[in-house]
Length: 320
Image (cartoon, rainbow, N blue to C red; front, side, top):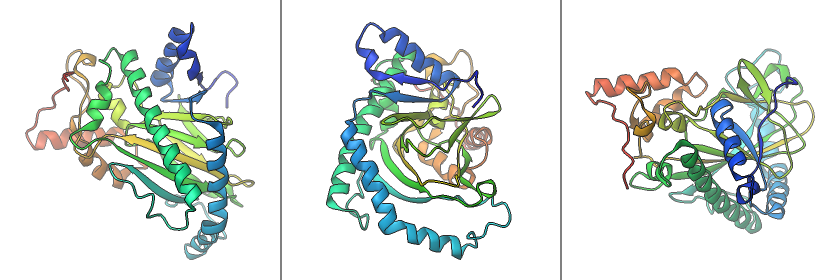
């Protein structure tokens, strides 16, 4: 990381004291200039986070490490003689929390692990909704506006990607996760505090996201860029592989519901917005095939799709 670049780290507990205004300003600045920030004192119990980290690493070691090695052999990645650009060096499984949970369908999870992840997921859901209201306050939107947009008619979608990035003998040959922006709303990441790897692209420079113990890293997805009419941005990020250490990553995605109608908030549009209006599920169908491409052509494709259907993009009205 360049010496003059200081990644935004925010103490959320200061919202309750005399430094509230300064803390809100730090959040606003991070959303505008970084699309990322790291939260300390976020209210999630540290002993819960410690237990989840322990059980996640144990689960990988016991049930997933061998499968990962078999995957490498099956795809010819155990030697890595040439650079690989179409596969990620990661071992993952997915938990769905909302609108319906699959927590009890995931194989090989202990009852203790399931219970802890259920508790952690609920706390992250509450934190995400608290943060959305803080963003509303900074944007001058009515409290609850973003939550209402995300809700659609079926409620928001919320899930967790549990990842391990094992040691890689030739990090220069493959990424842990290729560069992309996230399609959804608000992402809350509990990452390994010992093994680094997450980077974001700021002003043309790849910047390390510092691994801080008991922190939650926040980043903004494409939907928040559209709703804020570009005031807040989703940012390209990637995971670099490392020769030493297994990096744990637990990323939770608080996204709009499948039928949520996404468009720039009317009060944030001066004349005509450059951003499209669309249904979230339609965006996700497009994103699935072009995740590792720049976001701008996706936005343009959604605008063109709306024009083809003779639908004029209309800014969302702040009514309740």
